[in-house]
Amino acid sequence: MAWQSFVAMGDSFTEGLNDAYPDGTFRGWADLVATRLAVDSGPDFGYANLAIRGKVMHEVVDEQLGPTLAMRPDLVSIAAGGNDALRVRVDPHALVRELDAVVSRLRDTGAEVILFRFADVTVNLPAILGRRAAVLNDGARLIANRYGGCHLVDLFGDDGFRNPHMWAPDRLHLSPAGHRRVAGQVLNVLGVGVDEDWMLVPPAPEPTPWLLARSADLRWAREHLAPWVSRHLRGHSSGELVTAKRPELLPIGSTE
Image 1 (cartoon, rainbow, N blue to C red):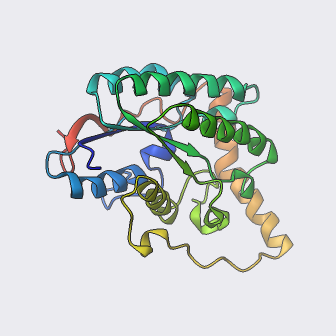
Image 2 (cartoon, rainbow, N blue to C red; image 1 turned 30 degrees about the vertical axis):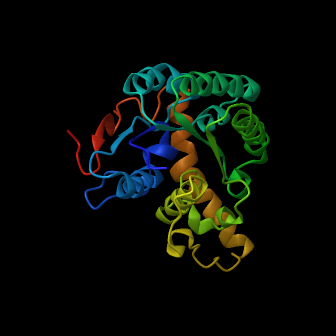
């Protein structure tokens, strides 16, 4: 099927953090998917990306669902809940209910919906996040099965994401290789297909000696964890001064 329009909703995962264009702006898996879909759909294919780093589920719903519905796209992706899972107090089952309501409204318009089972974050982060992510992942599968017209991308089942090179130095966001593999997974699920190099995983690193690994952990805590904790204790978000990179449906290559 050749879709004529695609809107991406979500947070940093979909904004494309750590996969930079030469000018320093972010590309990410959604840009890659949109560019490939436009090949089949032609020059009038429209793409919007409303995702903003740091957004929690209710912010994605409150700020992005209305504009998405107004654009009436053929295809919508939504990936949210990861930032909620980092909070001390969160009910992951409530997040699944919010996601279910969003998918219901999108399907009522006839849009097809891309959902995700997130990659295994316990490779890099505490196990408590894994338990919360498991609820979100199970919920995404149930929602995809409940509504026709949903495409479930199972990143959790992809062992390629257990390779540290698929993640950025902050251990939370994807590397360029990670974004490219996500794009490949999405396109395969959509039935578009990709060249083999989209799915390449860099060679796994050699095991790190214990002392060096602990030194790396301390450096990560100082450079990435401590600033995150400080920001959230002050009630700030990394995305509070950021606007969506593609707020309107426009042809690929156009920004206005």
